[in-house]
Figure 1: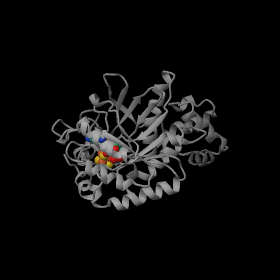
Figure 2: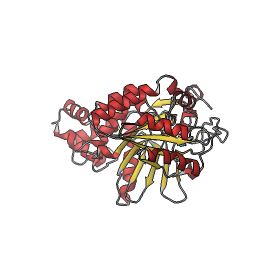
Figure 3: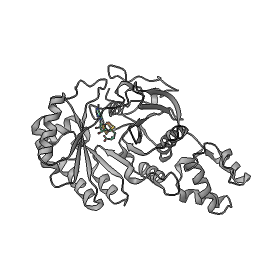
Figure 4: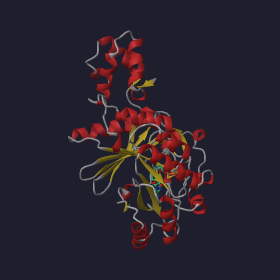
Length: 369
Ligand code: SAH
Ligand code: SF4
């Protein structure tokens, strides 16, 4: 069955015309979905009854079933585990800041990139999400927030998965959410975080959209980066930085470089100096993220003193840098901790925790744990 959030406005226009209806009906559906956040076909009272019935027969209005949810102790972070009809699981996190209500959304169930310090990477990739499955994560939380008179102010595509490895669906979802007649979330309020697929960064540069780009670097020398990120065996830092330069040249946007701080691994002053050399001349911002604990990875977060020294090297070179405030660690909602509650404490996979679970034949490929 088709899924309402998978269609963009042009596809709705085509659909209503196939039903023998005028094109403006598509706009009515669009506004129902994205302005009023209507959740079922009966709510679309702006439509003639026959069209409403066709809508109900043709489309499913939800694919995400919440099958688990956790609140951090401070109440500021809320994580929902969703199960999809085929048993795939994803997680979405809502963070409350003073003014912002930021959603961290997933682009894939699992991830194929296998970064050694990331819980999602240990799962392997189960499958790509469709555009609609990405969009529905936002709509779900938008409805919850609306009950409190609030709205989603920012989105970071930093949940499960590598967004540029599911490029078309992610772009379609972000265009839908950004659409001026629909959900209307400003492109500058949307951040895409990537492990660094150079050809996709170049493609993103040509989209003509003002989305923010964050590149997960973690190491400034190829040797070290390859130990942490298997993908770095395929693309060198030189190739990655070339793509970043093209991105900046085309968009005029600054890039955020993310750096997970792992004690004694990538937090030396040498690495900081190599990073300075790498980003020289680029409008850049560096985000230092103390490693969050992940089952099956022995690394430890860098102590504060080492982080301060690393940051000082960057600051002396005039590179702005911030240490990310860790959020939701107590509920495994921090960066790199999203594993659909499917990693046991020893880093081994465990299934059937929530919902129907994955059938054994559909176990994710490339499992590292
Ligand atoms: N695949 C994308 C987006 C999801 S990961 C990417 O890699 O950028 C989001 C961020 O969390 C990335 O910067 C990632 O490197 C970081 N991260 C992964 N595991 C982490 C961990 N255990 N502790 C802290 N940050 C982690
Ligand atoms: Fe995938 Fe990002 Fe985790 Fe690497 S850090 S395994 S790219 S989700």
